[in-house]
Length: 401
Image (cartoon, rainbow, N blue to C red):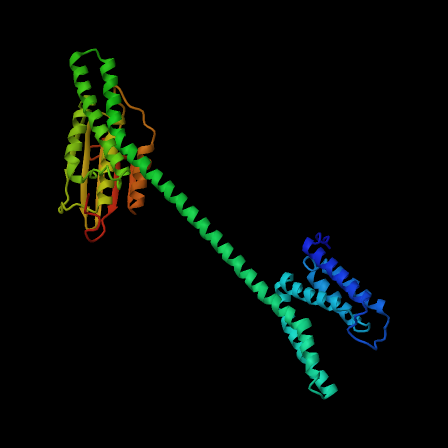
């Protein structure tokens, strides 16, 4: 059996006040009944002391305190009696319901009610007088009323605890939602930053390396031209992103997102930057319906093409880089293929973040993504990036700022 917990200071105070008050009542000679078998005044102090001791167990062992307290109350009926003993018993009854097991809290009020009814009926049958109802009322005040009060307080306490737990759960869910939103926003910003600057910085890195390694004025002049063009484009893209992040402020208006209609300009820009590496960029748009898809789908398709062209500039062997757009029913297909192999000349290092970003974009739209080597129709080994993006019905998302 585990050791009993240390009595609560309030329980110690109740026990001390009850014992002291009962002793004062006994010294004053105040009795509750006369003609008992143990008629000496001091005999009432024994149940009083027992009841005061049981007050120390009202929280830690309420069931034990109630059982022994009931026996002490019965014993008190054979003595002159003490009001403090009865009052402390009502507190023990109340504590047994409040601090006891849930099953005991349900049974005790029912049991005390039945005892009250039984005592009332018994004394009515014995006395055959309406005054016997006073005994029933007294019994109800001693046993049933404290139990009923304990049930009420316990229900309010449990309701308050349930409300607190619900509030804690709500706060936890809100914090989880906030953390997920922050994580998702950070991932989105990481994709945007990578897609915005990787293409331009890769071109700058490759052509600056070429300008430094090849001592030809024409090559250096062309490389510097490409570097300047990509620097200006990269700065414009960064300004656009800053405008998006500051959207809603009074002094900033976000620029529009890139569209599939601007792929020609993107291809032309990459064609000029990749010419020195032996790459030729080609756009094949076989869509029958040139209506723009919803904005999230269109932006994802544009970014996939942009990142695939950047990867081709970094890693592809000399040869064609083909960008193919197609649409069958409600499915937009984006496919970018380049020659797989080694090439001479400067190359920019890769981190793999581009493939991760493309895969995340497609997954967010519920599409399919694949990036793997394939064999072309002429037997050439190609690196192919293929994304299939669902296009919802309706025109939602086609309105652009």
